[in-house]
Amino acid sequence: MARTLTELNVHPMEAYAPTATSALAVPLASGLLASSHFESQSNAQSVLECTELVALILQAHLRSQTTTDWRLDVRKRLTLKLVCRFWRATLVSTPELWSNIVLVPEMPQWYIDQVFQYAKATSKQLKIRLEAHSRHADVDHFSSCIVPPLIAVADTITHLSMQYGSHKDWNAFASRLHALDAQPELNLASLRHLHITYLGNQSSDIRVPLPFPRLITDIRHLHLDGLPLTSSVVGPNLISLALLNLDLIYDDAESCHDLTMNLLDCLRQTPRLVVLLIGDLCERFIDESALHNLPCRRTAVVFWSPSSQLPNSNSFPSV
Image (cartoon, rainbow, N blue to C red; front, top):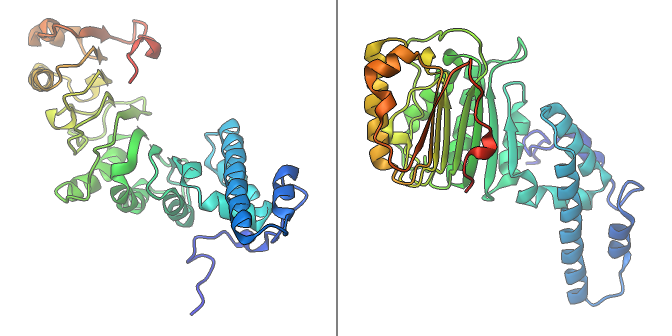
Protein backbone atom coordinates (compact mmCIF):
# COMPACT_ATOMS: atom_id res chain seq x y z
CA MET A 1 0.00 0.00 0.00
CA ALA A 2 1.38 3.40 -0.94
CA ARG A 3 2.33 5.61 2.00
CA THR A 4 1.30 9.25 2.21
CA LEU A 5 3.79 12.12 2.29
CA THR A 6 2.84 12.77 5.91
CA GLU A 7 3.62 9.16 6.87
CA LEU A 8 7.00 9.52 5.18
CA ASN A 9 7.73 12.77 7.08
CA VAL A 10 7.91 14.64 3.78
CA HIS A 11 6.60 18.15 3.33
CA PRO A 12 4.04 18.22 0.45
CA MET A 13 6.10 20.77 -1.49
CA GLU A 14 9.05 18.35 -1.66
CA ALA A 15 7.20 16.23 -4.23
CA TYR A 16 7.67 19.05 -6.74
CA ALA A 17 11.47 19.09 -6.56
CA PRO A 18 12.96 18.72 -10.07
CA THR A 19 14.79 15.51 -10.90
CA ALA A 20 17.85 17.37 -12.19
CA THR A 21 19.66 20.39 -10.83
CA SER A 22 17.72 23.60 -11.37
CA ALA A 23 18.93 27.15 -11.90
CA LEU A 24 19.30 27.44 -8.11
CA ALA A 25 21.90 24.68 -7.97
CA VAL A 26 25.60 25.32 -7.76
CA PRO A 27 27.08 25.14 -11.31
CA LEU A 28 29.97 22.99 -10.15
CA ALA A 29 27.61 20.36 -8.78
CA SER A 30 25.61 20.48 -12.02
CA GLY A 31 28.76 19.94 -14.07
CA LEU A 32 29.77 16.92 -12.04
CA LEU A 33 26.38 15.35 -12.45
CA ALA A 34 26.26 15.93 -16.23
CA SER A 35 28.96 13.41 -17.10
CA SER A 36 27.51 10.18 -18.49
CA HIS A 37 30.48 8.63 -20.31
CA PHE A 38 32.44 7.17 -17.41
CA GLU A 39 32.53 3.49 -16.56
CA SER A 40 30.07 2.48 -13.85
CA GLN A 41 32.79 2.44 -11.20
CA SER A 42 33.97 5.90 -12.17
CA ASN A 43 30.37 7.10 -12.20
CA ALA A 44 29.84 5.76 -8.69
CA GLN A 45 32.99 7.49 -7.49
CA SER A 46 31.92 10.75 -9.13
CA VAL A 47 28.48 10.59 -7.53
CA LEU A 48 30.09 9.93 -4.14
CA GLU A 49 32.45 12.88 -4.54
CA CYS A 50 29.60 15.06 -5.73
CA THR A 51 27.47 14.03 -2.76
CA GLU A 52 30.30 14.92 -0.37
CA LEU A 53 30.80 18.26 -2.12
CA VAL A 54 27.12 19.17 -1.97
CA ALA A 55 27.00 18.09 1.69
CA LEU A 56 29.86 20.49 2.45
CA ILE A 57 28.06 23.28 0.57
CA LEU A 58 24.85 22.66 2.50
CA GLN A 59 26.70 22.44 5.80
CA ALA A 60 28.43 25.77 5.18
CA HIS A 61 25.14 27.38 4.18
CA LEU A 62 23.26 26.10 7.22
CA ARG A 63 26.01 27.25 9.59
CA SER A 64 26.15 30.70 8.01
CA GLN A 65 22.38 31.08 8.30
CA THR A 66 22.02 30.11 11.96
CA THR A 67 18.72 31.37 13.37
CA THR A 68 16.79 31.01 16.61
CA ASP A 69 13.49 31.11 14.70
CA TRP A 70 12.53 27.50 14.01
CA ARG A 71 10.14 28.56 11.23
CA LEU A 72 12.97 30.16 9.30
CA ASP A 73 15.05 27.02 9.78
CA VAL A 74 12.23 24.88 8.37
CA ARG A 75 11.83 27.17 5.34
CA LYS A 76 15.58 27.22 4.79
CA ARG A 77 15.85 23.43 4.72
CA LEU A 78 12.74 23.11 2.58
CA THR A 79 14.22 25.56 0.05
CA LEU A 80 17.38 23.46 -0.16
CA LYS A 81 15.31 20.32 -0.73
CA LEU A 82 13.41 21.99 -3.57
CA VAL A 83 16.55 22.81 -5.57
CA CYS A 84 16.53 19.30 -6.99
CA ARG A 85 16.05 15.72 -5.87
CA PHE A 86 19.78 15.15 -5.67
CA TRP A 87 20.13 18.00 -3.19
CA ARG A 88 17.18 16.65 -1.24
CA ALA A 89 18.71 13.16 -1.17
CA THR A 90 22.03 14.61 0.01
CA LEU A 91 20.36 16.67 2.72
CA VAL A 92 18.27 13.85 4.15
CA SER A 93 21.03 11.24 3.91
CA THR A 94 23.72 13.31 5.69
CA PRO A 95 23.04 13.06 9.44
CA GLU A 96 25.63 15.75 10.28
CA LEU A 97 23.37 18.33 8.60
CA TRP A 98 20.73 17.58 11.25
CA SER A 99 23.00 17.37 14.29
CA ASN A 100 22.00 20.77 15.74
CA ILE A 101 18.40 20.27 16.80
CA VAL A 102 16.05 22.97 18.09
CA LEU A 103 12.74 21.85 19.61
CA VAL A 104 9.92 24.20 20.67
CA PRO A 105 6.25 23.59 21.54
CA GLU A 106 5.00 25.32 18.36
CA MET A 107 6.67 22.78 16.06
CA PRO A 108 4.46 20.37 14.13
CA GLN A 109 4.86 16.71 14.98
CA TRP A 110 5.91 15.79 11.43
CA TYR A 111 8.94 18.06 11.62
CA ILE A 112 10.02 16.77 15.05
CA ASP A 113 9.86 13.20 13.73
CA GLN A 114 11.71 14.20 10.57
CA VAL A 115 14.60 15.83 12.41
CA PHE A 116 15.24 12.76 14.57
CA GLN A 117 14.84 10.43 11.59
CA TYR A 118 17.43 12.29 9.51
CA ALA A 119 19.88 12.85 12.39
CA LYS A 120 20.21 9.09 12.89
CA ALA A 121 23.14 8.12 15.16
CA THR A 122 25.33 11.19 14.67
CA SER A 123 26.42 13.23 17.70
CA LYS A 124 23.79 15.82 18.54
CA GLN A 125 23.47 19.22 20.17
CA LEU A 126 19.91 19.91 21.33
CA LYS A 127 18.18 23.13 22.34
CA ILE A 128 14.74 22.72 23.87
CA ARG A 129 12.33 25.47 24.94
CA LEU A 130 9.75 24.42 27.52
CA GLU A 131 7.63 27.53 27.22
CA ALA A 132 4.70 28.06 24.87
CA HIS A 133 4.75 31.21 22.74
CA SER A 134 1.33 30.48 21.24
CA ARG A 135 -2.06 29.79 22.78
CA HIS A 136 -2.28 26.75 20.51
CA ALA A 137 0.90 25.21 21.97
CA ASP A 138 0.98 23.15 25.14
CA VAL A 139 4.17 22.21 27.00
CA ASP A 140 2.71 19.04 28.49
CA HIS A 141 1.67 17.72 25.07
CA PHE A 142 4.97 18.87 23.59
CA SER A 143 6.86 16.94 26.30
CA SER A 144 4.92 13.79 25.50
CA CYS A 145 5.97 14.17 21.85
CA ILE A 146 9.69 14.75 22.35
CA VAL A 147 10.56 12.48 25.27
CA PRO A 148 10.27 9.16 23.34
CA PRO A 149 12.64 10.23 20.50
CA LEU A 150 14.97 11.79 23.08
CA ILE A 151 15.16 8.49 24.92
CA ALA A 152 15.89 6.70 21.64
CA VAL A 153 18.89 8.93 20.80
CA ALA A 154 20.03 9.75 24.35
CA ASP A 155 23.42 8.08 23.91
CA THR A 156 24.26 10.39 20.98
CA ILE A 157 23.51 13.71 22.73
CA THR A 158 26.69 15.64 23.63
CA HIS A 159 25.17 19.07 24.41
CA LEU A 160 21.74 19.69 25.91
CA SER A 161 20.50 23.23 26.45
CA MET A 162 17.03 23.73 27.90
CA GLN A 163 14.89 26.75 28.75
CA TYR A 164 11.75 26.62 30.85
CA GLY A 165 9.21 29.31 31.68
CA SER A 166 7.88 27.91 34.94
CA HIS A 167 8.46 25.00 37.27
CA LYS A 168 5.09 23.63 36.15
CA ASP A 169 6.41 23.45 32.59
CA TRP A 170 9.69 21.94 33.78
CA ASN A 171 7.92 19.27 35.82
CA ALA A 172 5.73 18.37 32.82
CA PHE A 173 8.91 17.41 30.98
CA ALA A 174 10.97 16.04 33.88
CA SER A 175 8.17 13.83 35.18
CA ARG A 176 8.16 11.95 31.88
CA LEU A 177 11.90 11.42 32.10
CA HIS A 178 11.54 10.23 35.70
CA ALA A 179 8.91 7.72 34.57
CA LEU A 180 11.41 6.26 32.12
CA ASP A 181 14.50 6.70 34.27
CA ALA A 182 14.59 3.08 35.42
CA GLN A 183 14.68 1.83 31.86
CA PRO A 184 18.10 0.97 30.39
CA GLU A 185 17.28 2.92 27.21
CA LEU A 186 17.89 6.25 28.98
CA ASN A 187 21.62 6.40 28.38
CA LEU A 188 23.30 9.83 28.61
CA ALA A 189 26.87 8.53 28.52
CA SER A 190 27.90 10.98 25.77
CA LEU A 191 26.49 14.12 27.40
CA ARG A 192 29.23 16.66 28.20
CA HIS A 193 27.29 19.93 28.58
CA LEU A 194 23.95 20.34 30.35
CA HIS A 195 22.62 23.90 30.54
CA ILE A 196 19.14 24.53 31.99
CA THR A 197 17.92 28.13 32.15
CA TYR A 198 14.90 29.67 33.86
CA LEU A 199 13.07 32.19 31.65
CA GLY A 200 10.56 33.42 34.23
CA ASN A 201 10.83 36.45 36.48
CA GLN A 202 8.57 35.42 39.33
CA SER A 203 8.64 33.10 42.32
CA SER A 204 8.28 29.39 41.85
CA ASP A 205 4.78 28.15 41.04
CA ILE A 206 5.61 24.69 42.46
CA ARG A 207 7.03 24.08 45.91
CA VAL A 208 9.37 21.26 44.91
CA PRO A 209 10.49 21.23 41.25
CA LEU A 210 11.81 17.91 40.05
CA PRO A 211 15.58 17.49 39.66
CA PHE A 212 17.18 16.28 36.48
CA PRO A 213 16.60 12.56 36.81
CA ARG A 214 19.67 10.77 35.56
CA LEU A 215 23.27 10.09 36.48
CA ILE A 216 25.51 11.61 33.79
CA THR A 217 28.78 9.82 34.30
CA ASP A 218 31.01 11.86 31.99
CA ILE A 219 29.46 15.33 32.13
CA ARG A 220 31.98 18.19 32.13
CA HIS A 221 29.88 21.36 32.48
CA LEU A 222 26.61 21.61 34.41
CA HIS A 223 24.43 24.72 34.72
CA LEU A 224 21.22 24.47 36.77
CA ASP A 225 18.98 27.51 36.99
CA GLY A 226 16.22 27.40 39.59
CA LEU A 227 16.42 23.62 39.97
CA PRO A 228 17.48 21.46 42.92
CA LEU A 229 20.92 19.90 42.94
CA THR A 230 21.27 16.17 43.55
CA SER A 231 24.45 14.14 43.62
CA SER A 232 22.91 11.72 41.11
CA VAL A 233 23.38 14.18 38.25
CA VAL A 234 27.13 14.79 38.62
CA GLY A 235 30.10 12.64 37.64
CA PRO A 236 33.82 12.42 38.46
CA ASN A 237 34.85 14.42 35.35
CA LEU A 238 32.77 17.51 36.14
CA ILE A 239 34.81 20.70 35.59
CA SER A 240 32.34 23.55 36.18
CA LEU A 241 29.11 23.71 38.16
CA ALA A 242 26.80 26.75 38.12
CA LEU A 243 23.74 26.97 40.40
CA LEU A 244 21.63 30.10 39.84
CA ASN A 245 18.21 31.34 40.97
CA LEU A 246 18.62 29.25 44.09
CA ASP A 247 16.25 31.52 46.03
CA LEU A 248 13.38 29.99 44.04
CA ILE A 249 13.79 26.68 45.85
CA TYR A 250 16.07 27.33 48.84
CA ASP A 251 14.27 30.09 50.74
CA ASP A 252 14.81 29.19 54.41
CA ALA A 253 17.52 27.84 56.69
CA GLU A 254 16.28 24.25 56.50
CA SER A 255 16.25 24.06 52.71
CA CYS A 256 19.61 25.83 52.55
CA HIS A 257 21.00 23.17 54.89
CA ASP A 258 19.78 20.55 52.42
CA LEU A 259 21.60 22.42 49.65
CA THR A 260 24.80 22.36 51.71
CA MET A 261 24.54 18.62 52.30
CA ASN A 262 23.93 17.98 48.61
CA LEU A 263 26.86 20.17 47.64
CA LEU A 264 29.16 18.34 50.03
CA ASP A 265 28.02 15.04 48.56
CA CYS A 266 28.66 16.36 45.04
CA LEU A 267 32.12 17.65 45.95
CA ARG A 268 33.10 14.21 47.16
CA GLN A 269 32.26 12.84 43.72
CA THR A 270 33.84 15.62 41.60
CA PRO A 271 37.62 15.64 42.21
CA ARG A 272 38.23 17.58 38.95
CA LEU A 273 35.83 20.43 39.67
CA VAL A 274 37.49 23.77 38.92
CA VAL A 275 34.68 26.33 39.23
CA LEU A 276 31.62 26.36 41.48
CA LEU A 277 29.21 29.29 40.97
CA ILE A 278 26.47 29.78 43.56
CA GLY A 279 23.97 32.51 42.73
CA ASP A 280 20.84 34.24 44.01
CA LEU A 281 20.94 32.90 47.56
CA CYS A 282 20.30 34.94 50.70
CA GLU A 283 23.61 35.82 52.34
CA ARG A 284 22.16 35.12 55.77
CA PHE A 285 21.42 31.53 54.75
CA ILE A 286 24.96 31.19 53.37
CA ASP A 287 26.42 32.16 56.74
CA GLU A 288 24.00 29.98 58.70
CA SER A 289 24.64 26.91 56.59
CA ALA A 290 28.43 27.27 56.34
CA LEU A 291 28.27 27.36 52.55
CA HIS A 292 31.02 29.96 52.76
CA ASN A 293 33.37 27.30 54.14
CA LEU A 294 32.99 24.50 51.64
CA PRO A 295 36.01 22.15 51.54
CA CYS A 296 37.09 22.95 47.98
CA ARG A 297 40.86 22.62 47.68
CA ARG A 298 41.17 23.08 43.94
CA THR A 299 37.82 24.71 43.23
CA ALA A 300 37.19 28.43 42.85
CA VAL A 301 33.91 29.10 44.68
CA VAL A 302 32.05 32.20 43.47
CA PHE A 303 28.97 33.60 45.20
CA TRP A 304 26.87 35.76 42.90
CA SER A 305 23.88 37.99 43.55
CA PRO A 306 21.85 40.32 41.31
CA SER A 307 23.82 43.27 42.66
CA SER A 308 27.12 41.80 41.47
CA GLN A 309 28.39 41.13 37.98
CA LEU A 310 27.99 37.60 36.66
CA PRO A 311 31.39 36.10 35.81
CA ASN A 312 32.13 36.00 32.10
CA SER A 313 31.50 32.57 30.60
CA ASN A 314 34.97 32.77 29.02
CA SER A 315 36.46 32.44 32.50
CA PHE A 316 35.05 28.95 32.78
CA PRO A 317 37.36 26.19 31.60
CA SER A 318 36.60 24.53 28.28
CA VAL A 319 36.68 20.83 27.51
